[in-house]
Image (cartoon, rainbow, N blue to C red; front, side, top):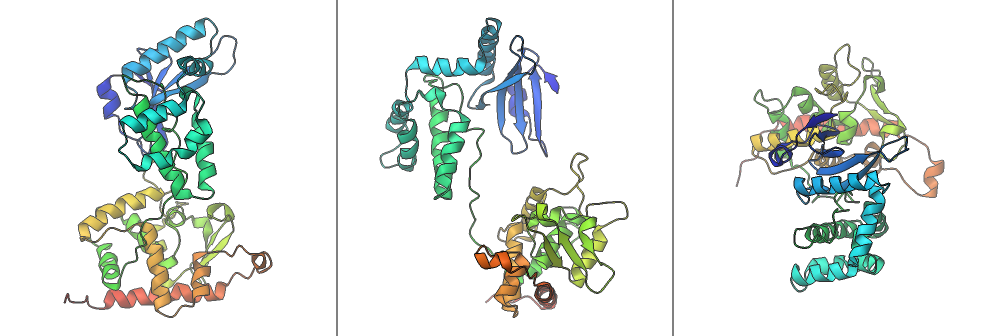
Length: 400
């Protein structure tokens, strides 16, 4: 673990790593550590070992910039003094909040009175937290409490859980500010939003598809060739971007034969069920171009610590590709939807397309119906290939 004399400039300028997290120990304050995760979240933690204990412990102090470096140092110093007389920092956090006497309800109401405008959305989203934690000292609310509440809300209202997350985050960021300091930690900062919200459904029309496919062959493309090939494979296989990014040599069967297949094990699938994806001739050609003799992954990462191309690398590269081609924004997952729509428009039956998408039935019949529909999926795989080739060769429509 790296060590440095932390400064405000250092903390502010530290960039997110490509993967995992960066941890830096503050040489000016024993036990204080600064963390930056791959998604850009910055926080301060305090690492310590109680007298007589075998293993060290860690407590989160707060997220940056909600908590300033000077505040983190002050808190770490207080905790270190407490350890010297046998007081565990975890217990001290709760004791400090209890002594303050301020309940979650009191702080929430003050927040609404002073921060929110009449009728603001924050009020409705704080109803459940206020009902659950109303009388509790606000400083005793932990990230576990937040996670459990959001999980419960997400069972019936996934998007509503995300909005509650946002409201709680605003409340705690307000409560931690100088002049109030009702809490020393924002427990929401380390809890991810429970639901992945679906963006507006986007499907490329023929002119957009033609422009993209041709654009992915340009010499001035702002991404590596393997990323362009991976994006094309999503269109040809209807596979999820993460599945394509992690494609392995060991999953490919009969590339030299007349029935090439991509066999994915259950652990690589969203629904944990094995899946066989037939490969069209164009898909095989792209795979062969990307795959070298000694590599296990068809699309290897350029980072040593990560063997396969990361899913988010496709998204980041596509943003630059879209800008270069002057197209309306879309995501790698939209290419999967586009391929399905192309197949349907060119005659592929809906059940066969659903099989190619690996949309598995969840009713009782599915337990007994184990037919893999490989023949039908192969026909579907050939449909978008032929359709895409035709679309690419056709001239672009003239604007009216």
